[in-house]
Image (cartoon, rainbow, N blue to C red; front, side, top):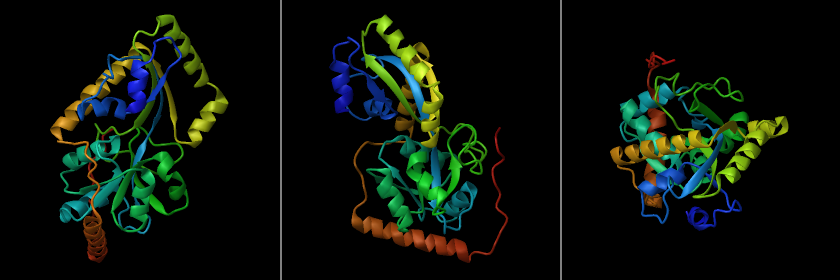
Length: 287
């Protein structure tokens, strides 16, 4: 937020640009800010998107998203999901999923993906919601199992991981985007020049290959179209934050609560392993 405020106050001479992501349009719904994401900046380009995944430990009994949600439905409050939070893309998406799937799971916020994944590997939480870069190497090493990916289609790097859409959640959107904006009143010819540079860079094969290795998908939506996307994101996140009563406090659970979550996680997984095998009914995929 400090960098965003500094960019908003900068001279609109083309010397200052700001790389943005979803918090750019989320934070304004949670606290008073000295800038407006829609009026204090000029949209240049939506550069890249990266999908997010719900993952579990590879030793977990849950093979699919339906497995996890069915087990959570059978033991309300016993299951947990960790991610960066609170009030982040993955936190808001998780609350949407809870509502759509009618499950009672505990959200555990962490200041970063690394401690969230470490909590999963240590058996303190049941699952993690994180972006590709945070879990890719552990998925390849067989230490984690991905249950679903947020992209509209399956990811080329992980073709066996179904999308949330395939799992029956047609309106689910939890991709993380990266865009670039300039201070309001930056000259139009300067904005056009930046648009040309960024769109050209996204077409360079070497650049695309490096992005692909990081799970970053080039977009290149620029100008007014990116402005419309920002407004849609602003309105949608605002609606969800109000409906789901999401707050921006740092509500990381203290150690005592973490110990309770660890115990519940292990008890829930043991109960799932002990149950007789049964046919799992999955939601009909929506294409």
